[in-house]
Length: 124
Image (tube, one colour):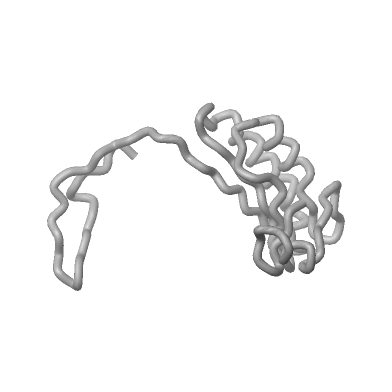
C-alpha cells in the first residue's frame, strides 16, 4: 500500500471536506481473521478455500497473528489469535465442511453464553 498518498483519500467532517496533507506508512503487526463459510453450499469449494488459506499462511510475517473461525448456522471460533503457524495450519485442516464436520466440536449456545462469547458463538 505504499503507493497511496494524500491525493488518494477523501475525508469529511460534518460534511465539510478536510484536506489530507500527509500519509504515514507503517509495517506494524497484522491480525488476520480467517472467517470461512462452511455451510452446505460451500461443500464443492471448501477444499479450494482450505488450500488457498494454507498457501497464504507462509506469506504471513513472524509478528503477525491469525485467528480461524467458521460459520454455517452459527459462528464457531476454531483458533484464537496466535503467531504459531502450525496451529493455524491445524485449524484450517480441521474446518468442518457443510454437513460433514471433520474434527471440530461445536459447543452448545448455553456453553458459549457462560464463556466470553455471546450466545450463538462457540469455540471449538
